[in-house]
Amino acid sequence: MTQTHELGHVVGGWIGGATLIEVDLRPWQLPYSIHSPDPSPLITLWSGPLLGVVVPVAFAIVANRRAWWFVADFCLLANGTYLALAWFSGEAFLDASRLFQAGASKLMVATYCLLTIGVGYPRFRNDCIWMLGSASKPPTACEKLPDSADDAN
Image (cartoon, rainbow, N blue to C red; front, top):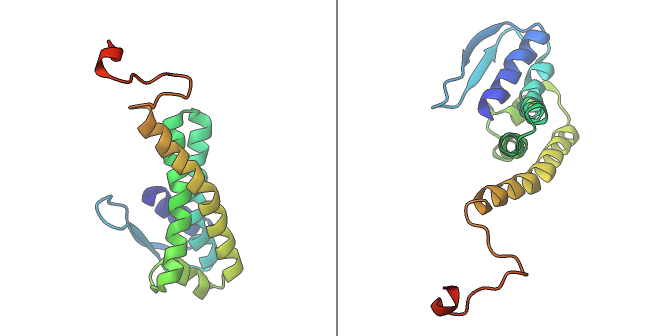
């Protein structure tokens, strides 16, 4: 999630004509990218959460595998949750505060958060149930459970 999200910022900065000063995508710390000057900060900033969702979903569509959907649905939920929590925290270096400073409307950020969390949560929850359930499926209503150890033999 963090990799596609941060690469989205890098791509958005490139599209918007920003100069990439520094980027750190190491997985063992919070990735970041710094653009200066950035003539189109809204493009740079929105590209992170947008491509952070679109890229994994596109891969899941192409691969058409349940495990890829597990990752894509996690990215959908995680990007929306990150933006919502960044908004709630008010931390100046996180995306929500930076989006608002660049002129993004609160309605647009709220809509993004509601859509990604609203769609991502039930999908990711179902993915988790499927992943955990494939290891030990409970019997269906039609299957009889043995009453004792003698009945099981």
